Length: 373
Ligand SMILES: Nc1ncnc2c1ncn2[C@@H]1O[C@H](COP(=O)(O)OP(=O)(O)O)[C@@H](O)[C@H]1O
Ligand SMILES: [Mg+2]
Image (cartoon, rainbow, N blue to C red; front, top):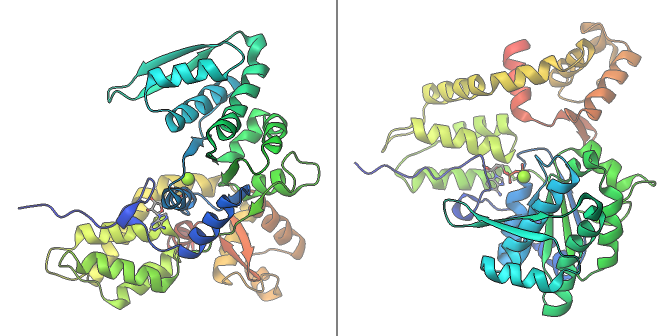
């Protein structure tokens, strides 16, 4: 029996048929990139930032340099990772790359090339520690030099950019980037709103007012409904509206969890049959089971008042938190609640939108509700 490919996907970058909508954001991104703007996107982890940007870049069919800063622990690692990302994007073969950089770079670091099992090259630079600043400067300038000589503007994506704040590189990067004007579009993606806002909106910060901020919305319920229904139908399975509503009321349209639930439901549903309430229940149960370690860890990292505040926010549906009756229920006062709410915002656990507070992670909310309320 041929196994059916699951039409849903979660974990990495969502591409091709796994990608749902976001057409507004794609249009805006494409226009801004063409105009050479620098763009800032901060949304929670797993919200679809990377997928969106990769999609837009593929559509405009422009050369891009992509570097993920998660996991980079110092300046030298940054230099090597950036150099690698540049090499992967600008030149085709290892020989060409080395030759090209020998021509471009004024400094003379040794360029070491190794190949992985698939034959893809990976580069590292050897240089004296005393040369570090010069090397960083030159590496930062490669995309700009490239743009000048080739009449082609590469786009640079810094993913998980909040990590740069730990490396003490903000000033150095900014001083280079600001010289590149509209020759290079930089796209800064970040998963920690609290840090990203400080980096880009605080008057004294290195990147103050250097970008256009693009907010991204959840994917709408109607788009998701079409997407999920089609995935089932194309594969001779069925999902009724009532279960779509269950999925979306839990995921709230948050991309990762919507796909996760749909994927697991699809797996548990036999061919030529429909999702039923038993499958729905078991699927949600197993998802919570699997995420439990992570959620517990997050819960335990909160103070007792912050935990109370979270429960209160969930029960009050994010509105009128400071009503006396609700606060009394949790033994919180105006000032203890206020402090807890501020703490939760600083930890990027909650946020405020449309006058309501909400948990950034809808599955964490569902977990707390199921387990502790
Ligand atoms: N436009 C989209 N359509 C469908 N699913 C998406 C979309 N964007 C993201 N996802 C889902 O969310 C997951 C995380 O997306 P990702 O782009 O890695 O998020 P982020 O970069 O914000 O952490 C993907 O694996 C996929 O399941
Ligand atoms: Mg990402």
